[in-house]
Image (cartoon, rainbow, N blue to C red; front, side):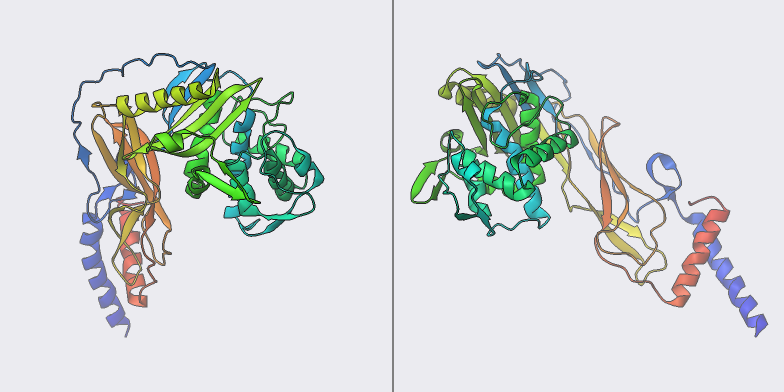
Length: 414
């Protein structure tokens, strides 16, 4: 019996040794990772390789402005964009952001009846016209905030989510810090003038990017053209929704102190822009400025999506599993923004953290895909297995364990 075991081990060693030695090393930089079963690398030659700056944009008629690419986060234009200015109803962008965050995590439901306090009912300015001592579905309140710009609805949302508007303002400021908004301070949920409340154009655009990117479902609300509640129909104050087919949200704002503000988002092909205008002198002027920003961004820049979320990246070797390979997909999209005609040479490279060993759960991270432009890293995303892989038979586990051990011995693996 002992002789048979020795013979079997010897045979396994003879077969496993060349497999171990022949196994490719890999990973980013040729380090101790494992290469995929088939190479995952693609190069896209630039349509034009002349790198020239875009045509300068004539300053818009407003105190401040900014253009952000919502897909890549690139900042394409700034005009006094870091100054702390009166935001007016742009404050409601954060109210909406936190509301959609709580909806996502199940802390509140869209059809949940929300009681209307006297404070909410008495809040002045633009209103949804909710009535004290009644209840309103939470989803209707969101539409009242986004479409009708209802200050009363904003207070009702704040009280539902945090108990008091003061506690909600603390949440708003904590969220602003978490999102990297460095020139923003909140005191209330609606934007009526109050000391200590401010926002920059850069922060307004950045917050708009987060709203539509983190919660794409919000576009159905912030892009709604009209809303009826209590027999009163109000049109969305964002006139670009009616005049520019590219535009599908976000929010306007106005007070005597602030002037006329707007944050708008539009899409053309793979490119989504968010523009912010703060302190335009007239209502028509804010939309003209926003249109100027959108036209500039779409005409002078391009967004190249190299990898889409969930896109197949290839197949990788699986050890100790019921199957020998498994597909790998991108955990999120990877893209670059550049002046039109100057995208450069793009390529992606898949790098595994270590040997991929079963059992594996669908969606489990096994590495990352890195995006390079002209050999410079410009982004990375998790690489996730596309399907679950159960542990294999005892023989498969023993065999693959031996192969992995031999790789380590001969320093050709992790």
